[in-house]
Length: 272
Ligand code: NDP
Image 1 (cartoon, rainbow, N blue to C red):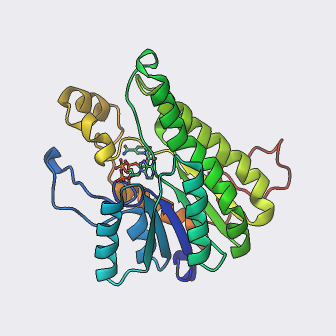
Image 2 (image 1 turned 120 degrees about the vertical axis):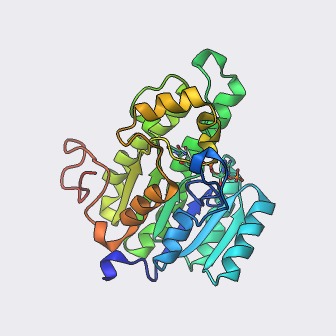
């Protein structure tokens, strides 16, 4: 059963205070329900991991930490705007301190989405989406590499998006960042297999979180989106966090984003 457990593992989850990181809103009938149980952070905690999370909203972070500690959870947190290089460096220093120089799991979850057409985006919007979604995937992976390597069996999971795989009718910059994460995952899976670090990128469709609140509150848009979803409904955060948890477990040690045989002969990375 140890293959299906995260007992003794340590994890850094960015943006873990709401949404896929921690579910805050329910969308039953598209009205807000009572804040529900969480997602990635709580899933990893439930499976036995100790978790460090971050958000740039200090009040929200403190409130979540208070809840978690009241429930006896092994979770710590830092205020960090992941779009800022120095703050990312500070975050990983906190993590190194917290977990004694080792880290088993990095979940790059924090992200923003601006739904506009290409011509409508301002230069500032371009920069902020790139800096929040793509740069941390690269930089936090690099910063965490020594810690993940020291653990002997590291796992990185990028929360990408279906928007990085297929073209949608808006949000081209968001799509670029997510496609970039997918490619980065393939390259790193190839490069870091020798260090026993696996990298996976998962690409969810529409999930009921605060990020999609605007989309789902527009009936026409919602009906259009859901009519194209095979299950005719949005996904729930727990349907993503379960995949993340699987990708962090000893049970998935031959699962890594497809790295391409030509560029990576002999890699241990499997195909996902
Ligand atoms: P939410 O907006 O609900 O939550 C995003 C989280 O990221 C929040 O905790 C937020 O913190 C944090 N965050 C945002 N910007 C920063 C920043 N600069 N620094 C630190 N933390 C930050 O989004 P979701 O849970 O829906 O999305 C999580 C990930 O999943 C994103 O990467 C998103 O692109 C991806 N995704 C989501 C889909 C969906 O349909 N919901 C579909 C596909 C992918 P705060 O609370 O302080 O704002």
